[in-house]
Image (cartoon, rainbow, N blue to C red; front, side, top):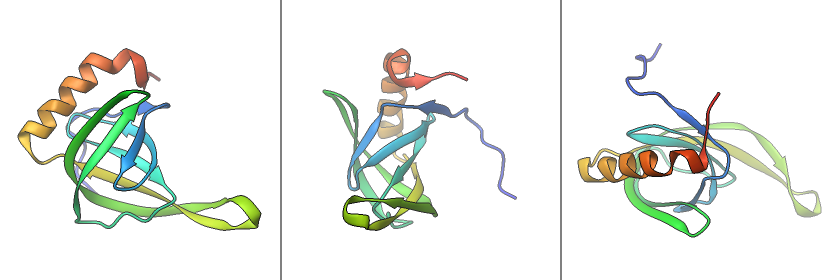
Length: 114
């Protein structure tokens, strides 16, 4: 079993990830996030991630730490696509600090509290 999380996670409803894959952000924490996508992300790869809500955008560097196939989704013309969930870790201190700033300044806009 994995080690317990050191920082809390916060659910989101309207936050999107647009690069390197498109998808919906499920939850955010101080050092990363989890998202759902129809495109397979590759574990271990580092990317610049574009994350945003409407016109507010952040471009942060991080790496995919885990990825799981969680189901399928029916698309146009009866096509069925896989649905993946993945986690991103922001290892770079400057990136993590920028993310933490964005979390604190925008929390009321896009974080859902239980």
